[in-house]
Length: 575
Image (cartoon, rainbow, N blue to C red):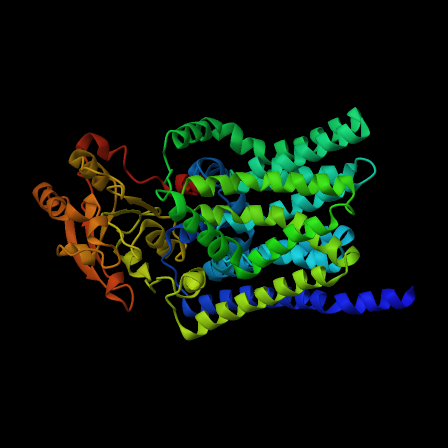
């Protein structure tokens, strides 16, 4: 009998080590490509990521100034459509590394992307063994969405961290002989952090939470345990998340209603075989990756191999996790509005059943099938990572399987530094107001705002005419213009040109209306032309700047607007 055990251990050692090697290589790849992107692109022009950086930098600036009431309002009221979970993480980072805040936040994105991996591993280790834990962590790590995710300070970084923590605690709770008060007390704040990271958290992780409590009630007939498993985490969830949602629930209900009515809904137009090719192609190459697809298929086959060997509670958890992962997949099938990125939380959830099934197969069904499953998955993972490095170092390659790798290493970005605009604001403006008429990938409100934030100035940047507008309300446009200090126009539009990165069909109404805008500004004598300003090595970064004349002060307002006495300034500055 010992000889059989030794042989079995030797037979299963090589696929286990291959999985471990693949996980280590994935960590090195995600971190290495993130640092390579940072080295190649010290300045960013991506709208969403720069906006999130700006939120944390402006919060840190308010904290450094001691303006706690304004910081409170920024958290709860500034972006009421966006939960502030990422801001909670970004604030201490930006405040601690203020001089290099944008770089520090980008490095933090890589760290936050990698943090779920050890959490998943340690969560699965007691149940699935080391090999199963590695397989589970690898399933999440290999999604091509993490290639860009590790480079981008976005809400998914906190979402995936909270999801991994919650799934680990819920797995331990599902298998524990009795409710764990400490475990459930920790689960509450984790659920709160997840709820504050993204609206997709509770509709997915909540299924596992409620499902585990319901399963244990059905199995144990323990009503007190059921109540504790729901009530104790609910208290922590409420304490962390209720202030934001109490203030903003009407807005979210309105958003949900608008979404149900078609807002932010981009339906998939393909049908039949075309739809099947689209869905399978996106799932394999954009969501799971080659290695992740092999791991998922291996886990499904492993389920058939070990279904008699799993305990009922383990099967219950596997099925609950599969159910919880389903909503983002359904959204993917119905819409094309960035749903590949939103599906990564499903991979955090699926990491746990995949690890349980593969780990059990390697420990108990130690024949050729189990070894082949693990070895094939590990080999496919290493092949995927090799392709990612090849694309990053050799250059972009036009091939469907490599598209997410090309995006991660070679997506458009421009080294635009708009700091020269800070010198054009009239003196005495503590909070400059910058208006943008027409925008491009490089010239957009967050990029303009960050130039001021890096100089320690809280600037307000707006689109004078919204990019999605279909017609121009010139009275509204001129009212908005009078409220700003500077009007910035991409130089590419100033002489009637168009954005070279957009097809002609995508020209928005602002780009086409610039001539009319200039004529109306001249008729109203509203602005002074400050000319074109080059803000980077690429002409795409050049902007045209107009200084808005301040409105005349009526005699009856002169006394009211007289500067405050120095002692009043001191009091006002301390509020």
